[in-house]
Length: 128
Image (cartoon, rainbow, N blue to C red; front, side, top):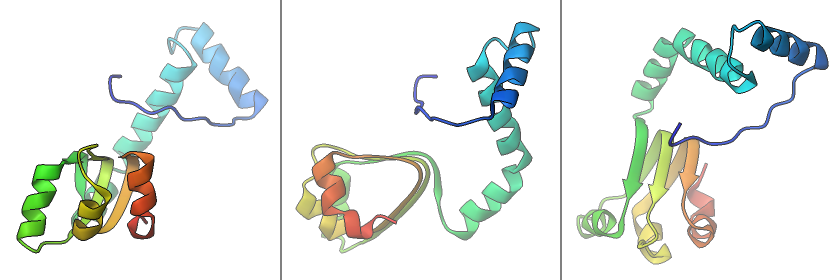
């Protein structure tokens, strides 16, 4: 998976043993394959709920990137951004803290916010 994030989970030793047994029996190629399959199955099961929530809250699903030029256009138009993203929100390194503070009204990311530490610190009170 090219664009993935590492997660750590705790499972009981009995559940881990069952996973290992299924892997050994050839149902899954490894533990990670088992866990990814389980996650995908649960996400598929709740597709409609996710879709309704995204629509109700005016969210974007996928990867959203804001760079200096796009934010300067918003700033010139006097627009404020309430960025609600399911996936990844990327604030490029060419964006100054001042520009971000002038354009971002609020940020809510279900997934990963990719920005440098200084940017995250500057926007801390706007990140939900």
